[in-house]
Each structure stands twice: as structure tokens, then as C-alpha cells.
Image (cartoon, rainbow, N blue to C red; front, side):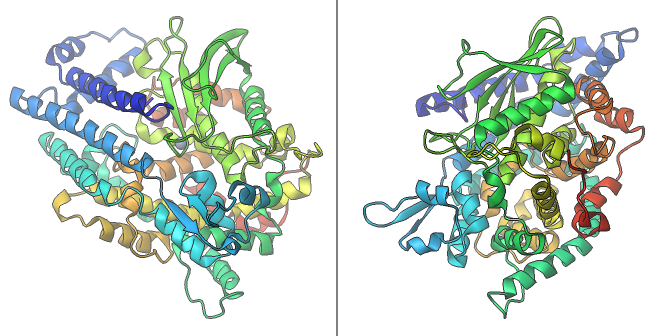
Amino acid sequence: MQKVHPDKAFRDHATAMNTKVSGAITALSLNRDVYNALSTLDVSRSDPATTYYVQRELLEFHLAGVDKDDATRARLRKLNDQLTDEQSKFDRNISDSRKSVTLTDRSELGGLPEDYLDRHKSSSDGTIVITTDDPDVYPALTFAKSDALRRRLYHALLTRAYPENLDVLKGMMQTRYEIARLLAYESWADYNAADKMIDKGEKSGAFIQQVDDATRSVTARESAMLLAEKRRTNPQAQEIGDYELRYLTELVRRSKYDFDSQSVRRYFPYPRVQQGVFDTAAKMFNISFKQESDAPGWDPTVETWDVVGDNKVIGRFYFDMHPREGKFSSAEMVTVLDGIRGKQLPEAALICNFPIPTATDPGLLQYEDVVTFFHEFGHLLHSILGGQQQWAGVSGISNLMEADFIEAPSQMLEEWMHSPQVLALFARDYKTGKPIDAALVSRMNRASAFGRAHWVARQNAYTAISYDIYRSKPQGVDLDAVCTGDMRRHGHLVPSQDNHDWASFDHLGPYSSAYYTYLWDKVIAEDFFQQFDQTNLLGGETPLRYRRTVLAPGGSMSANDLVRNFLGRPQNMNAFQHWMGEEFSSEAEKPKYPAH
Ligand SMILES: [Zn+2]
């Protein structure tokens, strides 16, 4: 409610309640009587899920400091309350800090699609305002020919919540460091790794280096193409700035791969994409979706849906899919109820900011929006299909699930939208109803493969930022220097000046030092994906085996085991490396999938 309720007073109230609830959770995590009772439980004859649950819970109790003396516990309680407060402030500052750029010259919008221009009419004084909301800023960064406009917008985007978040983040770093030290860890990064797949903080340092090594040669090849593209209009150009990556990537996709991402938008009107995402999930996992109009959400635009499997309702979700003033401005899946087998149905909500369809505007999505939709829906399915455990504590994507596994199922589902078989389910021209043709899909896939290494490099730079901010004593950390340094070292582009990325890097709150999760899970996701029949992603036994071995257990066993159970071994980098360099592999010369 803090992030989505239409009424500001309600959002404020939710923030206050959130603090209160977190306080109660902290108090429980430090309650020695509960800990003593749990640690004397005899689970030797219980089923593996129960044993695992108790083990995990005891580890969390230990990490909360329940076995410390009274004074330390009191201090930890105070620090945790403080941290909750700081995290809330950090988030709120970001969502309240919508920035905008005002234009006086309409020609600066050259290159942007017509519906975008329609949505950005000049006001009476002749000015046009572009905000930092997703549907405003990203099309402009991708398509606007005006270098100056893109530069200004990028600057606006990367200076959000600055300077408001300076003291907040510094405070958050200090609080976390103190917590880690009280629990005998060297740093927050070490402490934070203890209940994750990765297990040790220093392993994220090693992982960042591995990814960097795997990426460098591919970004070099991509950069050469980007620079060649830039030199067509700027023959003196020597380097590529981070603010122009989207724009230049788009130009290369057009010129080298004969693909204009605008050309596929006509196949992605919002209502069709939603239906397509539903149909994909239904076919893969043998489920269906039924809209429940008698259960309203928090805003009239929110839809409520039931998930049906084996002729019974197995969960419910809420779709809050379009932007609204004061609403969280990115995309996220939130668990509403964990679910308890036979007692409570799991519930989840999807919060997105896709263009809204109106009487005159079909709400056409960008290619990347569709990827995001699949991604977030992957989280939602994980939450619902895993939400049938005996214990709420390990149901769905519970707090006890290793947090560095959570992005694997969602990132894997992104791959489905490259499949002609899947696209045939929903991608039809919004005017003529004609299905998207196979040649266009093949060009789209080849073009979308271009730029992956730079995407990985950027993610890796953010991973390094998240690690470097939390890997040592906070006093010596210069946030701007860390950001610029890591962007330069790992991002493989020239970072723009006078930005303060960290101020609106929302993951520094909840993910803190664990931003590596995204790439770590991308490695797992690609490894998973290679197990599916690449010519028939919706059929065969693999989707149901995947549902059974990876999704259905929820958090009731270690993610390292889930991975081993599905792959027959631990994950490795092979599939990921193949995915990253696909645009340069000989296979990219021919369509990856046969036409259906
Ligand atoms: Zn995600």
C-alpha cells in the first residue's frame, strides 16, 4: 500500500505501519524464548521440508543475534528498527523524486514515435515536459535523435533523490555495518551472504571478476559496432557514453540487423500481451486464469484474477499494471499471502507501469516492456505455484528462500517471448489482426541478441557498486567515486559526469550488497532454459518437470538442491556465455527457431 495506494495519506499511513510490522518481526527474531523452544524441537523423524524449515529458521535466528547477551540484543533491535526506517525513507525519496526535463523546441522530439508525440503535446506556452517515469524517459533515451535531450534526460534520471538520499544511504550503510560487526562478521556483505546460495561475501567479488572476464571480449566487439554507428553522424567520435547506449544500440539493430523495435510495437497492444502471457503460462504449466470481478483491489484499475489448476482455485493475484501519480514507478511482484496447503491460498500482486490502453490509444508496449511483463509474471507464477507448502514460512517465495535464487525463474521466462510459437499466441497487428511474421520474429531475435554483453557489463558494474558500498567500513566510502569507478571498470563505457546513480539505485535498500543476484540468477536461468525443447518451448515433459522440481517446492528446500535436481549438476557459465555472444555466433546467421 505504501507503494501503490492512490491516496497519499493512505500511503503515509502504510509507511508507518510497515515500520511497526518490521519492528514486530525484529522483536520476534530476537525473542529468546521462541528461539529456545524452536531449538529444542525434535525434528529427527519429520519430513525433509519440516527439518529444512526448522534449520533455516534457526540460522535466521542466529543471524538476528538471538543468542547474544541482553545488551547486544537490545542494540540490534534498535539498529534494525532504524534500518527499516532508513530503507523506507530511501524508497520513498526515490518514488517521490520524479524529475522532468522541459523542452522549448519541439524538434528535439525527432525520432520518437507518433503516439509518444501525441502524449506529449506542447502546452500553451509552447513547452513540452518529459518526466523520468518509465513510459516517458525510456522511449526518449532509445529513439530521440537529439543528443542534448538524451543527455539531459539521463542526467535527470541519475540525479533523482539527490541530495535527499545522501544522508539516508550513509545512515543505512552505517547501521548495516554495525549490525554485521555485532554479529562477528567483517562487513555487511559477508553477513548478508551467510543465508544465501553464494554463502560468502568474498565470493561475490570473485563472481564479478568472472563475469567481467567472460564479458570483455564481447563488449569490445559490440563497442566497435556502436562506435562505427556513432561515427556516421560524428566522424570524430572516440568513445561511447553511457547515456547514449540505448540510442546507439537501437541504431545498430536497425542498420545491421534490419530491425526497428518500433516496427514490432504494433503487435504488442497491452490487452493482447496480457492474454499472451496468460496463455503461455496456461499451456506450460497446465493451469488457467479466471477474472474475479467481485474482489476489488486498491484502485479501480486493479484487476483480480484466480489461478485454476486441477479444476480448483490454487491462488489469486492482483494486476496493477499502469502508471498513476504517486505510484511506485518501476515493475515489481509482491507476495500478498504465502499460502498454506489446504488452509490458505497464496496471493500475489504485480505492480507495473505499462502504457494504459484508451479509446483512442491501444497502449502499445515496447519490446522491452513485453520482456518485463514475462519476467514479472515469472515471479508471480513462482510465488503462486510454490505457495502450497505445509508451512507458510517456506511457502512460495518466502523470506526463508535464498534471496539470490529469486530472479532465476523470472529471468528464464523472459526467453519465452523469443519463441515464434509463443509469439503466435498473441502478437497480432492491432489494426489488421495479422499475426507477426516469422521473418520479423527472426530479425527481432537476432537484433535483441545484440547488446547483451553491454547489458551484462552494466549489470556487473551495478553489482560491483552494491558490493563495494557494503564490503567494508562505511566511513571511507565515497559514493560518487565508487559509482564512477565501478562504471568505468566494469561497465565498459564512459560514465557521464555529475551523476549520483546510487541515490536512486533502489536495490541498495532491500538487496543491499546482493545485487549480484541478477547475474548469478541469469547464469542459472540460461542453464535452465537450455534444458527445454528449443523448438517446442510450451510442450514436452520439461515444463511440467520444471514446475514440479523447481517451482512447486517453493522455499521448502535449498535452492542449490533445486538447481541440482533439475539440471542433474550445479549451474555453470556455459549457457550464459553462449547467450551473451549469440549475436556473433554462426548460429545467429540463421533463425534460431523454425517457423511454426
Ligand atoms: Zn525480478
